[in-house]
Length: 326
Image: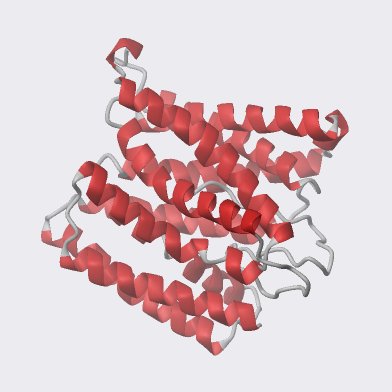
């Protein structure tokens, strides 16, 4: 799973509209132009977030999954908090107890239940397949919106149906024994956790500053990952001397670029670019992940992955276009 989107305040202003729980825009305020800076920031989100699956795969080659995820998010959260304090003053980090608890809950759902489970799954399945499975998240959020009384458009339901068909096709390699089924099932569980966290993040009292909110979420999620890793005994037999240079570089990349640079670019895009354009990351990231996994790690692009991935991406495109018109 890719890094956390900017968190909406509990009561967002009417303009600019924040994304919905799926990270999908619902309207485009007038007057937002597509400048060179917008394309540069969008390229960062496309490539960096799409490449995080490759970074995770390289990291877990010689690092424990939950402990490495914990290190990543705690470091990224502290860096982001320091940047907020430096640029906006320490007051920007002040939150109420309710806001802090809400941010911690969302962080655990997104980063422990969502991202860390993907890290664990990538010890068993290809990074490209993991990215395509994660692309189903917007469909789960549409389901959650319907359960809680909202009425998404007919196109959104069509996107959910396409996404579920693609999900079934993507599961075939696990059912046939070509890959480990438990890895596929863990990613599916991770998408549900990420969807729940995304959905409720705009419905509970979160910190008003989205950067501060994400900093608290990363630290809470990272601590949760570390505790689970220790509980699983990942520290037993683990020696820093056994970690490869490639894994260290990949972890540093995930911290600095995946969790700080790309997040900052995305948060800036939310205020500076047409939201319908920003939302295209949802179906570009999986394509980037599949290409990088094939080119760098030599992962095979089998017909279930190709067909299932195409169907999932088509479903996400349909959901995005429906939300954009909403």
